[in-house]
Amino acid sequence: METRRCVAQDISSRWPGKVDGRWPGLRSVVMVEATREIAGAASTERRYHISILPANASRIAHAIRSHWRIENSMHWVLDMAFGEDQCRARVENAVQNFVILRRIAMNLLKRDTNKSGTIRRLKACANDQYRAGLLGL
Image 1 (tube, rainbow, N blue to C red):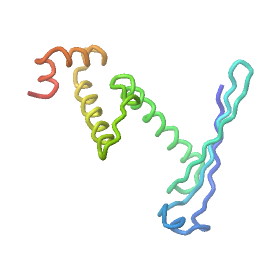
Image 2 (image 1 turned 90 degrees about the vertical axis):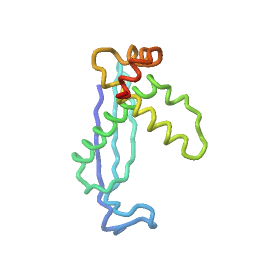
Image 3 (image 1 turned 180 degrees about the horizontal axis):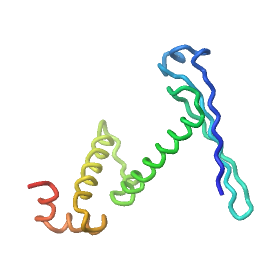
């Protein structure tokens, strides 16, 4: 069982427009407290956020949950399918370029809805005609 509590504090009146020029438009500071109970043992975790949204706790909590739902599902696919976490690219724009290439590849593979993701990747790797079809050639 997991319980979440969100507290948002309006800071726009304290730091109008910016904080040391680093966060223009900053309006609220948010704390999300998640308490999990598993097999009778409870643990609590607090996460802090800054936001340009007004200090509306329910709206911000929804935005945070929606962001992480998308992020976790996308990251899981990219990591499992393409080994994204194992990539050690560090030169100039290599990281951003590889991220773009992985997402393009994932979207091209999603075009074929007749097969699972693993089968599509293996088939694209081994079959020139299938790969050409995915690329629209």
